Length: 259
Ligand code: PEP
Image (cartoon, rainbow, N blue to C red; front, side):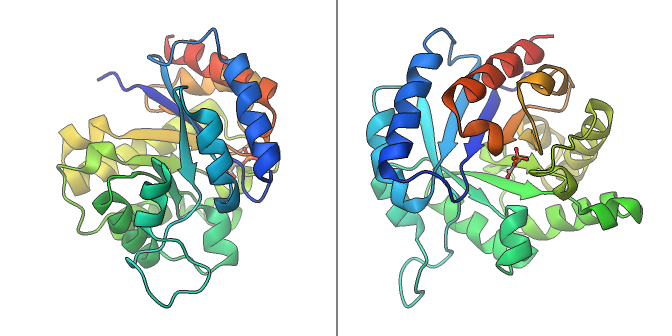
């Protein structure tokens, strides 16, 4: 099955409104020569930068995503943002369960599941992050961890909407460390994730779900990673913060996906 690749930039806590606008304006220029039929391109700025980025991305095919979402529709949840607030601002995608949120902000598979349901209910495209820590990999627990994250994170989701979910495999030991999973290691994890997704949603839906790789992806390794059969894109941190490096990576990813 051919899946359109999706490359998303996770800006984390970087770029104010003016800087975000400037980055998207530059990215539009850098991407003038690519076909957006080959790849979905998404940027995920901080909440306060969403407005200026959405304005700058209008009339382009760059999609805009948030980095988190709350599961409740409204109410006494100081500091949180609801699905309706994102959708009514023009947001189309949302990252859920990033390892930094699991590590520093108490995110669990149960909260991932609640956020995922809120996102799908509002018509947002969720990018759900899974991945093992270094200790889990060294303890031969990678598959058990991924299986649990998928089983609990995706519980109660209808198979009919599953193809609209994007999964990001992000080995925690590769995020921001400069250590990338080798294409073979990443492919093995992606194939395992897809088989677990098939267990939850059935083979047809699992074959349609796009699985991104994330963890020190850059233009130098994007082509080889994307040439793997189960790697359908990337979730990019550091290399997404400059228009030229992100655009170069996107071009390499497209080339790899055509191999
Ligand atoms: C991320 O935070 O999702 C990520 C993949 O970061 P980096 O590309 O910097 O490793």
